[in-house]
Image (cartoon, rainbow, N blue to C red):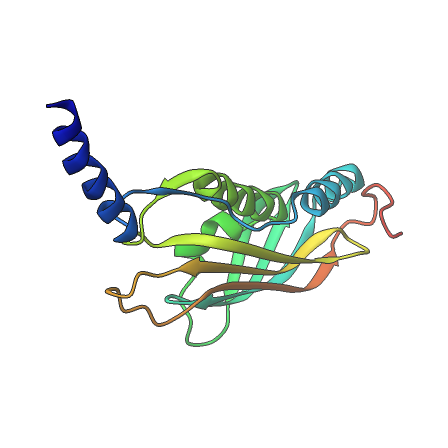
Length: 172
């Protein structure tokens, strides 16, 4: 009887695996070492008053200028015809940008996903080597064939300006 049960169970398991019914562990490609180094350098610089241009390109979008005082988001000035930061508030300070990147990495890295799920596969970050801030963040993802997706998850930070020069030196 044991042999008969095994002969039925094994083919079922093989069929399930070949149809991608079983979840598999997903690892997100991400340069964590550079991320940690740039984040530490940003924190060490102690910049608290600044502004920057922020662009979110994807399903929803935002183009405008973000202003931060004493490390706290105080204002966004969206370009004409664009809504306020709203949906992208997690990118409203440089500290929050770093937090958002890390959150996305931790949300998917090492998790079980099936071929029917949408999930991140890669996070690409470019940095400003003087101010140690992310200047380009691109999230790449797996999308199942039965799901129609039109768009990306890309973010740009530019025109970074320190507003209070009494911040710690960080102009390497």
